[in-house]
Length: 283
Image 1: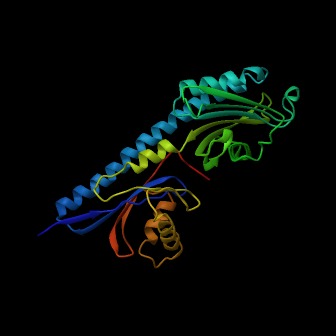
Image 2: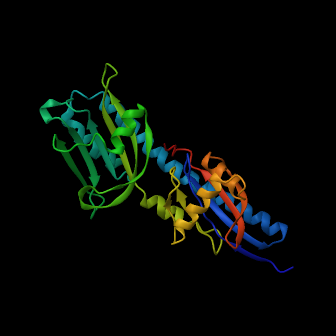
Image 3: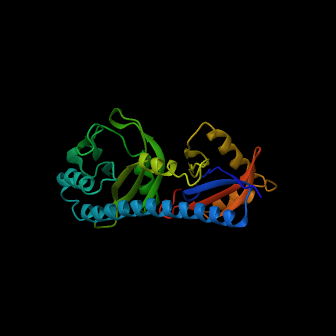
């Protein structure tokens, strides 16, 4: 029997980030089918481990600095050097912010924020900006969400336009407390989504395969081509329509399950594979 395999991979994240592979089979012997399915699963798992390991490194480094900051709140003058050191020792971290609640350090003005970031031209160079009462940052996602939740948390990717550069970043934020347990500020480590995108888009276990990532709001964050809106609409409709063939896949991905389902998108029939990223527990 002639065997023809056409593969297409499409993915999204919901509740937790999820990579997914959508594979189309026209005809296949069982051995080829089984091998292809296992290859897709292994590709997802390997990628998930690589990304989770990197994110774990960011969390560990941030927690270590967090301890140092909370034990050095009486020395605000060293916060810039602490931020700079975090970036020097952790190449995946693009920026570090230590920001305090209004009035914590009146000698610096109402708002006091230290921001270290990699130079746009030379990433080995670290620039530091100190905001002494001039910029309102308490409504920024990287500040408000960790403070409001009162716990360490990953922030949904967002567009950052600091310093004339536009980039998509995510952040790991930790609230800061004084010796009395009162909230006094936030430590936030920022990472660029570019490395994430490069890795996800490089997934191509089969000739006609591709991968993408969707955020908790249902919008695709990473996608390789112009079919982005069509894919978003397809899964949004499937999630809301219990009679849809892809309803089970949409529900499974939104609830952070690992698995695969057979679906039809337009005139293309195949399988979608999905896997959550354990560390990205977005709101």
